[in-house]
Length: 355
Image 1 (cartoon, rainbow, N blue to C red):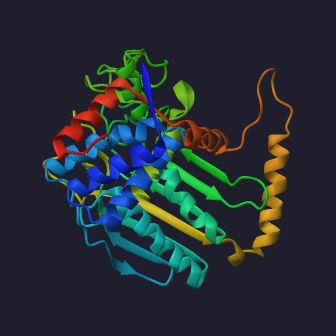
Image 2: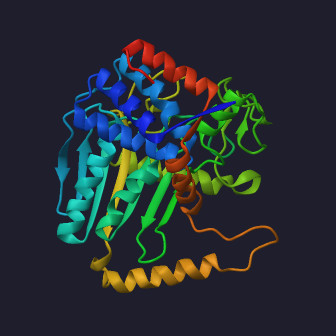
């Protein structure tokens, strides 16, 4: 059963909750915009359903509601940003702005982030440069829930990669993908719906494939992208994200990444500071005139979208489903599962905020 609420109503509620935990007004608004971008785009696992998780981390003293985000090391085209333990929903956009400013000055900007937290959907951050005729790249490491190929141990996160490319008349190209077969949030949705998960998403504690949505909570692991014969490819991509996001910045990596999920505890012997992200911004006109590039992107997108498709299907461009979902949900509202609605109502009672 679901309940549909208007975007504006969820925005006002979430913003009030962020203020209630001590976020300044500007940060509360930015955190809310970042968070709800997931719900608008149909990535329900990473949107307002996660609000109670951020509050839980704040109550545990693991989130600084008033961080002083700053650059600790830089060259003309690169930087390390220290998130000061802040909400990744706030740290992420600020770090991307650093990358964009460097791209404005020298053509490209690359920023690795330490001492942050879960930053919502990677696609939101990758899309920020689009309005400036820049290509955006965003990555983050995440809770250690993923077993590398042939492993029984959870050593990596779902470690998403997002790339956003501007077009002219066509909608922008926006790839936003986990490096696992499915993100952990998909398991959380299956748990709320009390439904089995597809084969290939997870393994149990013995390393056997499982359709139990609680398999990971019970000692199992998520599986890398690629399935039974190609999981080494997803493992490799997830490893690259971990290295770029954390080994490069001085954040925690691998099994030491501080978890967002409630059933894992932070490692007792951290090897870095907080969670890590990686952002890139590339000015299109650092390579060729932006108008020419965007015209070719229009042609590229139109060509792929017009490809002959199998019966009853159509060829999509990365970003199409999310863009179409956002258009509908802005008009019709955002559907919330009953467990999510109950979580929000409990937050409202805790902080005296009306949903």
